Image (cartoon, rainbow, N blue to C red; front, side, top):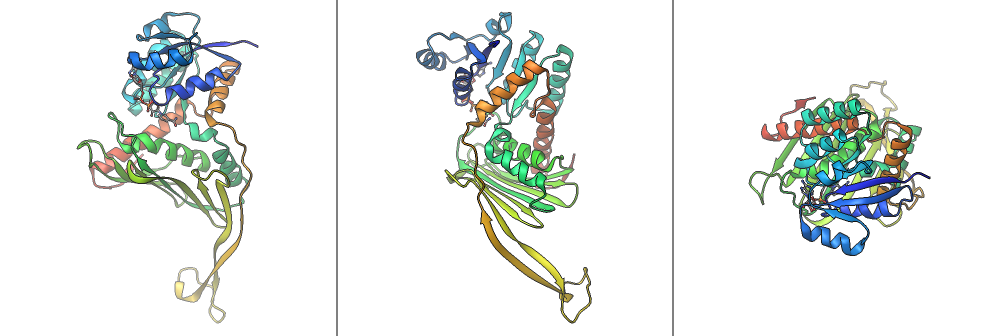
Length: 343
Ligand SMILES: NC(=O)c1ccc[n+]([C@@H]2O[C@H](COP(=O)([O-])OP(=O)(O)OC[C@H]3O[C@@H](n4cnc5c(N)ncnc54)[C@H](O)[C@@H]3O)[C@@H](O)[C@H]2O)c1
């Protein structure tokens, strides 16, 4: 088995999770950890004494033994670090969101194509057992026609200094919705407000309009007293609730819905609500069993598979770009107090 020599740039909050998962992956070896903050490097050195720790990312790019680089730094640095890594011939996994603009994401995608290197973005949730199961259920047709997705993703902090709450938490919901629905939205409308830092929205409500009368709505918030991670997927036949905070039974599929019938004495008339009878159906609930595997270990394994086979990642640069187009549109819409922005 070939071992891929890797480097992780950025070991603040999320980077150590990548390092841990890489350590547990037999096909990878962590050669370098890089961070501009010496205290972060010391903490890593204590835990993984054999890892080389460096403050300057050039040491990583200049080492021909390094084949793959993981970028887990603040969003504003993603483009420079990822493009330097690609130019040095490395495969790159970048944390979400891929970059801070659609224009720079497009440049990165083109660069990866020119350099024939794998570019993947870490939309971790797509690799969770819950989202994989939801995808299976949606694709099987069990829910019927999908009507809407409704998500609440709120907690207290972690405040980011370079991005607002939509750019921080929204990539999860947008990537999940695009994946489940297998399409991108046509329009975005968002409202948000800044309370703690004047320029950076910490509470936001985002609506995505998908083709086919399909709505997705996300509530993202850094100022909530409790952590809520809930997503509803409503269909014409059944409805699904995903509660990621639940230790077990994270997904519940409800055999619930409405049936519209003509009044016994009236004629069928779809347009006239007074001539119809709405019947509610509340049937059984089923909680499918989910595998208990850390999603980030799957992210790492998938990235290594793509390096080995040359396959396009599930969360490719292009998938990352679709997410950023929505984030940019949400920013524009928030500036116009919720006016819808076409994509
Ligand atoms: N996939 C997920 O679920 C998930 C979860 C949390 C964070 N993230 C993403 O991970 C990235 C990092 O977020 P975080 O919360 O860990 O941030 P953080 O601020 O805690 O850590 C970032 C680290 O990068 C270092 N750094 C900054 N510029 C650098 C440079 N030029 N070279 C080397 N090191 C540098 C900082 O010193 C810091 O230690 C963000 O893109 C964030 O969106 C992803």
